[in-house]
Image (cartoon, rainbow, N blue to C red; front, side, top):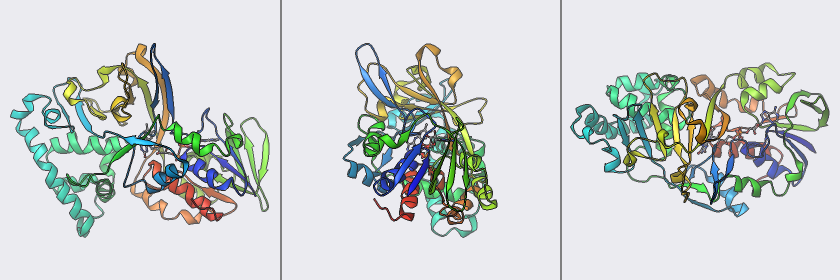
Length: 416
Ligand SMILES: Cc1cc2nc3c(=O)[nH]c(=O)nc-3n(C[C@H](O)[C@H](O)[C@H](O)COP(=O)(O)OP(=O)(O)OC[C@H]3O[C@@H](n4cnc5c(N)ncnc54)[C@H](O)[C@@H]3O)c2cc1C
């Protein structure tokens, strides 16, 4: 069969990897690299070369079984990563990190702050309440995060300076939008990732040499079938064939189409979208996030003891987007003379002379309506010669992208 795949992110490439052995596959990718959010930047300094990740960075030994199987099959090496979290305000007066006791009390004044002590003491109570929510707490099952936190009377400090930063950073989401997030969705994610207790935490990992290394291995068998810088403009489905029209006006015909873009992009491509496609793809919006790779250490907490892998910025005037700095030296164990950082949505605070690259990424926005949509996948995928994949069909992470690509490949009888 002639199969077109639109989008060379992890979802489209997983499908292409399995399908190219039996079928004539063509991958159309709008961008200039294969990998989509897997985007490793090579940085050459005077004496060193580093491969720094800017999009997909970490995975773990518990929640990424299919991604790990893929890496094992490809013989791609990974290494341990360091996952820790810090929160700091603009003045540097409020700062803590989850790294150690000296990170937690990086600002010694917090030792004498009742509000801070209460915030720390509330962590085990939060973990117990979240576990109950998942086990038997039917009464609270449908509450939003705001309602659930209020029902348990957690302190303002705990909510605003600990929970909202973590949830906002994990999903790169607007902190205000987090309030309407279903509390049970958050609790399930925290439980799955071993975040509701001190023991039994997953081991976090990164791909050795940067995540682009696995994309090279994954695409080795069909690299010649990937057309970079080739945006698709429109897809039209006929009885016998699917017509794909490129941005340059050229049209090509295929037997089947796999749309591996984000949900909003997928809908925009369909010139003949069905009512079900409009309803389901339209229910999962995406939000833009500007990521900057840079070496400006002023974007890390003021006190070095408070430096962590993920550093959340508490702003006096919060922005409608997550504001976080990933410390790449820690996450990727880089031995570098510079500190490499990736900062989301705070580009105006970074010294322009220290900026290495600016990239626009988009993340799915999860609402109760979006989550309900995921269960109706079979209504539109595998229907009318059209298949959909993308991390938005799951939690929005790399494993979800792999799973969605495998699901499409399975439709054609191909398995990992
Ligand atoms: C800053 C950042 C950090 C992240 N960190 C992690 C992490 O550490 N761990 C984790 O598990 N997840 C992480 N994620 C989540 C990440 O989004 C997913 O893991 C996954 O990579 C998304 O894959 P995808 O295939 O759904 O989409 P994408 O990777 O976005 O792929 C979609 C592709 O479709 C292409 N496309 C769109 N429209 C067209 C068109 N018209 N024609 C042709 N091509 C088109 C796009 O150019 C893109 O390449 C992170 C995301 C970001 C942005």
